[in-house]
Image (spheres, rainbow, N blue to C red):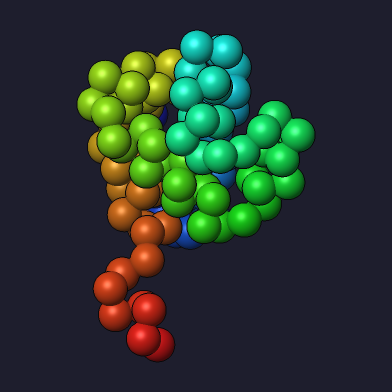
Length: 98
């Protein structure tokens, strides 16, 4: 397992894309994600270019510990790396007023 910390937004975005690919790799994971996000398979690829969408991908995984652990295991990383990327990309309350 790779224990390296997420270094910056680019690394966090790359990890979020890896999480999205993990989700998309299995219909049993993909269908609930599509239902929760309101996307279709056709709009998924376009949405993946949006930083806010990548936060939503990580929100989805972080919202269920079993999914988080399964995703981390599937990616060969520690769940803490996903959590760090999620925190890095998530807007902070004071960012809304900047």
